[in-house]
Image (cartoon, rainbow, N blue to C red; front, side, top):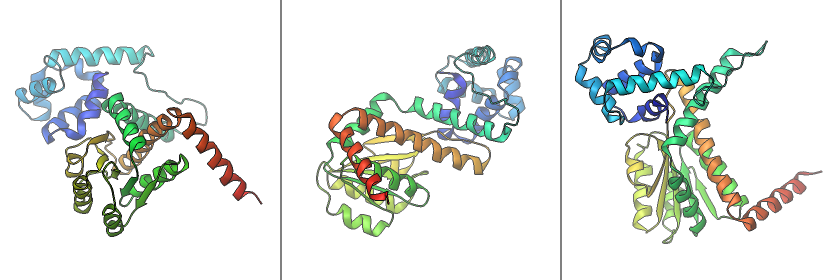
Length: 281
């Protein structure tokens, strides 16, 4: 994994001092080769030991190892290697749009790397084996809950989604062992969602959470946790990146569900055809 991707993916779980170091490295990667650990510490107004601990926490032997790894990653990018990001240079192109695509691509790559294949397959297996799938998200998180519930229904999977906490609490009361609850919560701190997830577990159901890659109360209750890495300095961009990255994650799960069962895929095609016929004049 590229060290810059690794730093970006772990940023949301870092302390305030660690985030300062991470942001400096991400923003000044080309200059890192000219900085010793002491110079980096002086530039940030922190102790040298904080820099050393930061590098070791990321799995590097020390600061020189991190600096060498970053230099290699930059070299591969300059040569158009695997770490290079797509760039739009066509006449009349929109530089802001191109930059946004790149920022989304970086977030999606970091998210892909922190969610192992075993985790994704675990989510797919949990959905396939569930008697019923409950989904809830509040605010913008409900957009994903609603969209994913529709897709599950098209596959013939019983999906129950509510954006109203009280109604979901009533539905959860009727859940059975083996059912699945998927909780969408960007920051994972809403008390009502924590209570619903805890009660669902008491009903012997399983819980899947979709949150940022941070330690949070909702994620702590998950049997399987999907994590999203979507940091950006601009708050209006960070929200867009988070939403698109969650969608990419859900699309990946959906594709696994489609390709893992021919009968389920056939049911999807039939349902789509039926809907199309209903919409035709």
